[in-house]
Length: 288
Image (cartoon, rainbow, N blue to C red; front, side, top):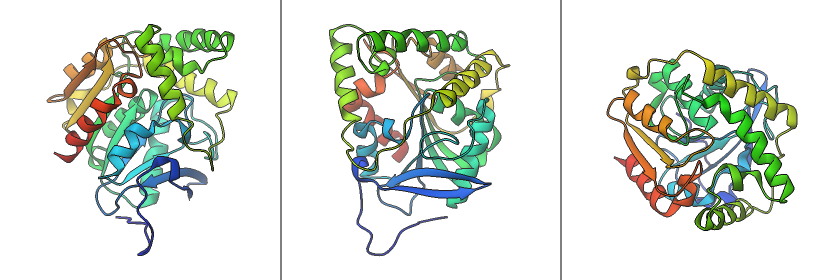
């Protein structure tokens, strides 16, 4: 196992201050950030559609990094990582496996959101020995009902955001009521807390290729998730327009002994709206 530290290296527990590092394997250079105390099983974060290293909510990362070794990374072809974006989720999972292996870890906890949750499922189905615990948020199973409709919703909300000079995530992740709008603004502001060494934004072609992968995932034959015996925590808002909330319930039914949290009056970004409740719940689950 890789501890990847020097004796005098200061302990970083703020995502805004975590340095960006790189590691190269199979001809691809992956950009990543790590923080928190090392030596334990790391928590690897799998990010959402169109996201780079800068898209993780520090109110989720920081509380977990106070107690656990946290690693975030850019998927192949995204942000500062090199290579071409794969057009299917299984290849993204192969990349994640290559990245984790290059760091020298043979056991991890996986924390995933949205598209990252698809990748996490594909990874654990193919490499069950690599994963100890699994957190699946704002996501759904392969072949899940209406997942392929993410594409239309994404384009619609991106247009709405452009017309109102907003961040698309304000529409995609949150309800458009007073509570949701307040939570959306707070979330978008938190993503700006890191002021130096920010990541490159996703390119249009990379984004379109990710959407193609999501459509394939939604239209594919489901995996047998009863094979997943890992402790699994599933969470979402009760009104997810991107990956419908009932798919979180579907995952809960398919994965034996999984736990499910559905937050009221919230959307795809329910875990970010309810970060004060969710971060401790995730930490408690990972520590068990």
